[in-house]
Image (cartoon, rainbow, N blue to C red; front, side, top):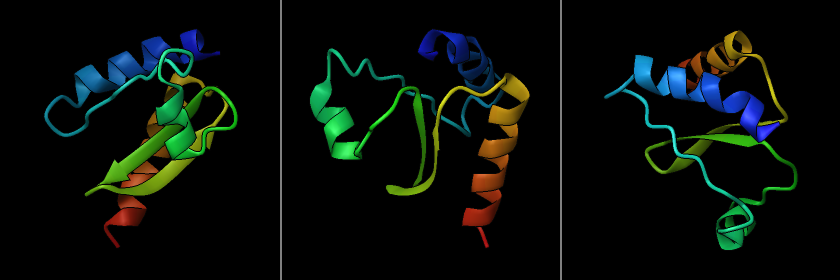
Amino acid sequence: PCRAVAPALERLASERAGALRVVKVNVDEEPSVSADLGVQGIPTMVIFRAGQEIGRQVGALPADRIRDWVDSALTSATR
């Protein structure tokens, strides 16, 4: 599932370069990061703004739904 969403995340990162940073973490290689974030399923996508978590999605989504989820989280955080 992580490999399935990777192309969509890479496209989104490219489209929104300078406004959005996408970071992928291999939980097998960095278990402390997943533990610190409370990751219980993969893929888990987390959005942070100013160091605070503003959105979390567990499970793969198609590219258009990832984009909608990101936009919704960012919009909600600015209210």
